[in-house]
Image (cartoon, rainbow over all chains, first blue to last red; front, side, top):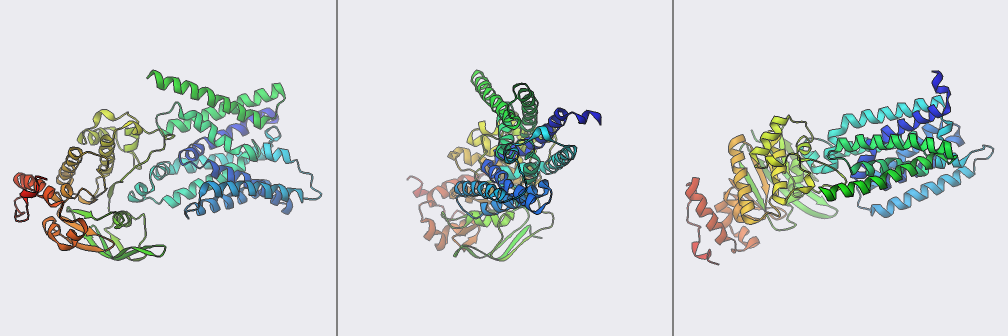
Length: 267
Length: 251
């Protein structure tokens, strides 16, 4: 496994692992208009980092747990007729603020806050890589398994009920996979940019897809391209890697939207 | 054996009772229509039947392995979700190309296979929804105001299609509609709902029932008679003509 000795190879593999898992989940986040939901879950994970360091457990486990709690809280409240927009805005930012405050109380532990807020993909270890690919592949597996049911539920919950499916269970699948992706992504792009990795590739792919499956695949390709070229640009220009990856994804989105609009006009 | 039976079903939202003490049995192959004013609990009743809602009290019993084909009142497809007609037919269960094409042909929309769902007209959309509901070979077809947004001839054609489907598949049909005249003529049994079941029975019985008239007035009688009249000539001579009121059809 000598090729894993190169930190750039490890970074590339970590980024690809995230891009592959985030693509299909990101499509659901876009279709179901849950982008703020992704944000809230991601922002809450900084609290998970603080707790994990405070209680001396693995950061991955801490983040996974808080992300899961946050995602469950939000999806439970979603059914209760609250104004979701406001509620999520409150939860997302208070969780972030609370996390930052909690981190500041961690005496004696030197913690590089920036690396959690914006990721530290160049410092990915072999263990991290194992977690990222393990988590990513489980997310992919779960989504593939429930794909049809998830799609039906997304289209219309009553349609799912009539087909003998349980939309609440499918919602749980999304909640769970979201928490895993957040935990996986924190090392790669950091708390603040996780939602971008979910939404931007999916939104880019929308311009060229005519079925849900093609959109997911196109999103995976877009995300992977953004990761690889982001790494390259950041290596050449010495820019922060996570934000560079997201910036490239954003450029792809702009280009794709322009091309997509052009295509629709000529048709 | 009945396909589905509701026993003493009541539904409360918050403090208010939406449905109270509903008893309803649907048997194989019959067409049952629910009519009722806005807010009378029609959709709530259907959602209990498909299992999307649990009754506050009472029971819903389904025949084991009951296959339901459901055509919702409205289906909003988010513009960010790309979905061809062909792909939609394979939700949630994958169907073969042959079956999908056959279903579209039967619904008279075979040319639309590769079209985006969001690009369909109202009538085409309803036909595709129906084609999808029928693919799973349902024992019970449920239509929730399925002709909303269609014009009069369009919805008349739609219900003729339903009748043909029933003859083909032998499935029972449970539908909700506000187009009383069209729907009632095509039903075996009509249930007049207003929080509770006001009256039920054969269409001609319900149309003359005082409870029904109290809810809908007698204004629809004319149109009902007109439609029923045509209907009688084609294939239903069991319905007597005594409640036809042809003199009202002029208005």
